[in-house]
Length: 439
Ligand code: ATP
Ligand code: MG
Image 1 (tube, rainbow, N blue to C red):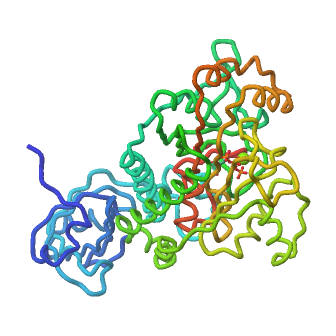
Image 2: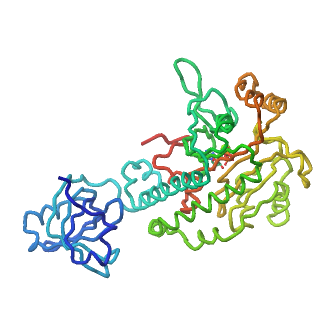
Image 3: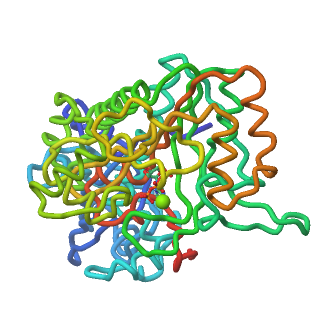
């Protein structure tokens, strides 16, 4: 028979007052005297203070409990009683305890460096900070599935091993595949474009790999991208979907994770304010004007925006900003020419990036997709690629092509921004970067 036990969050309630409960978890903190035991118990749902006296517990259990190190796993039995000094307002008056597995002295103590904590990630993952981040991450990806399914999109799963580059060869990870060369996926896009001619509206949340050689607090080598692709839609239409998607995600996190946001010290009012605002859309050329007039930065038209320029630009916006129509020259081969652009001194593409406020940079990148086969081949040649390697992709333009658009949202970038994290490495359980592959 399964024994009944409760989660901590479920007993921190007035209607549990006085009830006898069993809790299972890990010792988070411990102190006490020869007569009294104070320990804080942790499980996946929260922490609770547990107190017991030598008299009530008896010498055997009391001495065993007093000898335990933090992170020992235990089963605690006792009565729930209100205590205004206890975190959560309630404590357990312990009347029984079983040790499941005693811990050795825990290697993580206060005031350790971020790098040490990353070396110890397999243990640091138990911290309240990382537990809260992982819980919010679970809400975030769940919200993406609900958002797209609610709009009639189908989940489509792309391959991870791919023979081609999608975002340029320099960030490809090469893999030895039965003595042949193959790559880890940089984006689902080419496959998504094949699938929209069957399913029309699709999305995914998938692992993505890019060999990012510059060390920044925004780039991981392995990250998760939530992408969407839709037949018949223009890039301006998918921008609206991206805005709605992110508002949906923020709303869901505010609703489901208020305690986690509190643990992370996130300003929930600020997050809520994003839901009410209209999010601006400006052109790349307008962005350069703002940077020049208000930001004191002169950028040559045609250059992609760098991190410092994106950050400066966002000082003038208090909600995510979409920048459209970047210079065609700097864009990937599949982004088509925008013939209707009015303010640009040179050719621009039907594309966009969405930037987050407060220095979190690009969270979404998207575009319409070139449907003209000659234009595609020309752009590939310009990038130094052989169009022959993209034969199957060209087929998509030969058999009833239609206008289509899509975007990729960086799960860790969005999470880092929502949780106000200092580094993207804390937005993924086990980060992979240029330097870090362990643990
Ligand atoms: P950046 O210029 O910041 O490197 P990108 O233009 O290469 O981004 P896209 O190819 O448009 O990015 O990818 C879509 C989204 O995936 C980005 O908006 C970002 O949120 C996320 N992303 C891209 N590269 C990384 C990375 N190395 N680590 C984490 N997230 C990333
Ligand atoms: Mg990049």
